[in-house]
Length: 414
Image (cartoon, rainbow, N blue to C red; front, side, top):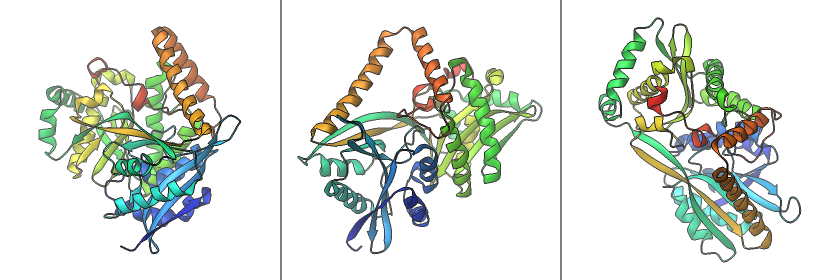
């Protein structure tokens, strides 16, 4: 491989200019999560990236694209407005993308990542590099530590972030079912549901199918969370617009599935996930509360795992969140981490301190308020988010997958 060069593509037009090369690199890259795909990130920038400038760093061997780091720049408050230049991942904010990283061709991972990080360190055009959602086993972590952790110009910080349960699928469905927490219950409730009229499972995978399927999922999801003031994950109109767009883009690339369970002429449970390489990523779900005691969500999830195993996939990944229902099936976990690199100067230090004080204040508020008060605040916040204009957004990371677990499976009969 020849000496790598790094160039930057900046602005909204950069995403479209890189589309073909990006898609080709993604298809070659080993283990790349769908949240690094061009489809996900281009849709995210369109609907949720207002006020942020895409900065895509490309490592090339000659003319060939062998590595890509997709970041966005936002200017934030320092001592006066708009003084701190913050770089963060494209595709993460508000929609909770996991396992974001440098996208690299096989065999070029270390060289491409090292070249891009060296370029960033020399570039001088950022004050804070805030990378949230890196996999805890990413090879980029050691390179980040080597490049920035020993450089006197920067302060390097790494913190654990999210738990991501997963299930290896290598032993086949029968063995997987026997190792779950409730195999006999699964078989029993599946038999009962199959005895009812118009029982069927469906999987929407084409651009024509996924649009209507997503609307059914959103309706079930809304009803599930209505009693708690709405969904953290799906409250904002801009987030809904993003998902309506991205599922069609991903379907055209063969990367998305919306898996449903129908009984008595209606959809009773729905799961929205993505497939990349030999891994399936479960992203969001909804189920009919009137059918909760029939365990429709529990059954459809089990059938989704069976279908993934039958397609020859190796891993079923539940993504972020320690919800109880995931551990009916999952028997292993990954973690994501947050890396923050800040220049050793006053304004980046004030920015970081402000963020830390804000987080500490939230924890203190949660600790001091009784449960009814916390529920009132959550409902008020979700109601406010639902009223925001379609293309607006804040700094939150709303995700039911992370912050609002489903009821205990034994209580909700998932």
